[in-house]
Length: 497
Image 1 (cartoon, rainbow, N blue to C red):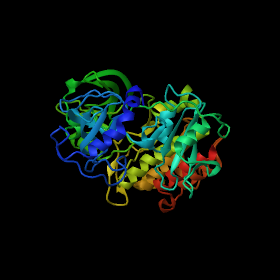
Image 2 (image 1 turned 90 degrees about the horizontal axis):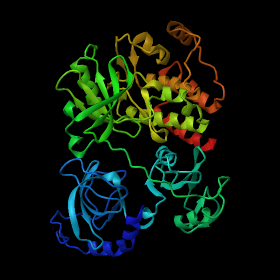
Image 3 (image 1 turned 180 degrees about the vertical axis):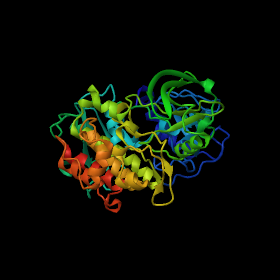
Image 4 (image 1 turned 45 degrees about the vertical axis):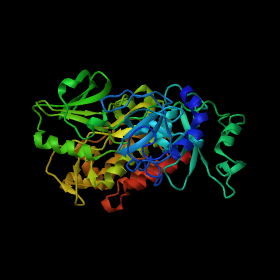
C-alpha cells in the first residue's frame, strides 16, 4: 500500500477504538452523526449511510478538480460522513483521530483499513476481468499476484497470478474447518496470510513461487468530477482536441483533454449528418442511463453550438477490430481471446437487463484499454425498448452482422444482438477476420436463410464454436441470452487454464 499506509497501520486499532467511543460531533469535525455499520459490501452498494467506527485509507493520491473536493495522498486516513453514488463526503484525520479537513472524495480511491483488507495483495470484491487488467499492467512481472473475492457467489476467494503474458486463477475455498486451500486440495491454512506466505516459498501448480503483490492501478472514474455527475453540459472551451482517432458515418472521434488535466475521447457530430438534435439527445439520454464496467462511460456533452460534442472515457488501444489485427493482438492466446468475448457478453448482459438493444454490435464498435479491458461503444443505433423488438425502416444495416429477421423485417431485439455477438466471436477467434469472406452482402443473406453457417475457424475451441452456432439459431427464441453466454464463457476460461 506504500510507506504512508505501513506507518499508519499500527495505530489503526487504537484509533478505531477511540473513534467508536466518540459522541456525535465530538471528533472536532462538527459534521452529522454517523450511523452504525450495517448492510452489504460498500463495493456492491455505494449509496447508503456512513459506517460508524470504520476507518478508511487512501490507496492512491487524488487531486481535487472542484472547490468542494478534497485533495489527498496515498496512505491518508478518513472517516466517511455521507455517501452519494461514486462520491463520498469524508473527513481526513491524523493518526490520533483529529480532523484535518473535510471534503468530497471518489469512493473507489478508499479502502477499509482493517484486517486482511490492508494487505497489499488483497483487492476486495473483483471479477476476473478486472484482476487480469491489474496483473497485465506495466510493472507486474511473472509471479505477480493478488487475492480477490469473486463476484460469483459460488466461488468465494480467488488467487490470481500472472504467468508470463497471461493470468491464471485458482479458487481458494474456505473449508468446513475454517481452513483455506487451493482448489480444495493440498495443505490447509488457517488464514489467507499464511497461504500467501507458504506459496511465496513453495511452488504453485507449475507457476513457481508467488512473486511480488500486484501493483494497484488507479480505477477509472465514471465522471470528470463530482460536479459533472448531474451537470452534463460543459462549454467546448474546456476541451482541447488532439489527434484524430477515427471517422464514422455520423461523427469523427478525437483524442482530447479536459482542462488540460484528464484524457478523454471527443466524438464530434458531423454538421451535415442525418443525426438531428432530437436524435442526438436520444443518444445522450441512453448513454446517461447506462453505467457498467464493460460499457463506455459518458462524461459530458457540448450542445451550445454546432457541431455537437460527446465526451467519453478514452480507451488507449482503440477498436477491438484494429487491435486484434495489430501486432499486440496477434500475440494473444486463446484464453485471452475467450476472456475478451466474455467481457463483451458481460456488458451486453447489462444492456439486456436494462431492456436496451445495440443494433450494431461488432468488433469495430468495441474498444480496448489497458490490461485488455473491453468496453462496448457506439450507441448511435441503440434504442431503449419496452416491446420484445423494435421495428425500423432504416436501410443502413450491417448485413454480415445482422440477424435474418433484422434484415428481412427490420426486427431488432436482444436476440438479434445475440446473433451479432456470434459474428463478433468469429472476429475475435480469427484475430479480426472478415465474416463470410467469400460472400457479398446479398449472398450472405441468401445463404444464411437457406441454412448456411460459417464453418469452424482454425484453432477455434469446439465449445467456442458451439456457442457461435447457438447464437446463429434461426429461431430467435432458441438463441441464448447474454447472461447465459457470459457464464458459459467465464466458466470456459477457467477450464482452458
